[in-house]
Image (cartoon, rainbow, N blue to C red; front, top):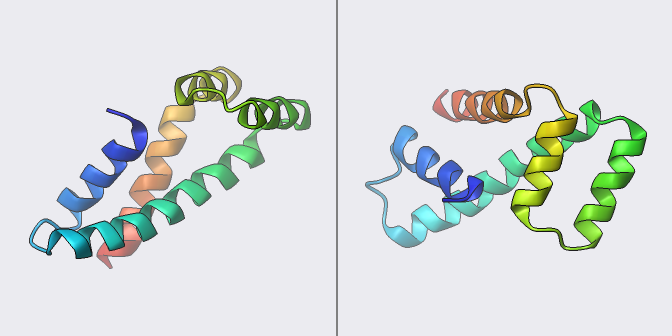
Length: 97
């Protein structure tokens, strides 16, 4: 299961969206996933040195596999997985307020 699918399943479960009609779930998930992914991207760029940002851009431009991009990020950013989890947790906290 990829990261985006895991994120969506977590959001449905923890934000109590399971009772909504599937089309409404999908609409909300698309919007929320975009916000979370943008926040992860911003956080990632803030933590990567400029040379690594350029290398990251080359990976993206070359349509690297998501696994390859994630491997790169976990090698370059200490505690990358924890950073992603924190961004997701912060977002969920905001949504539950």
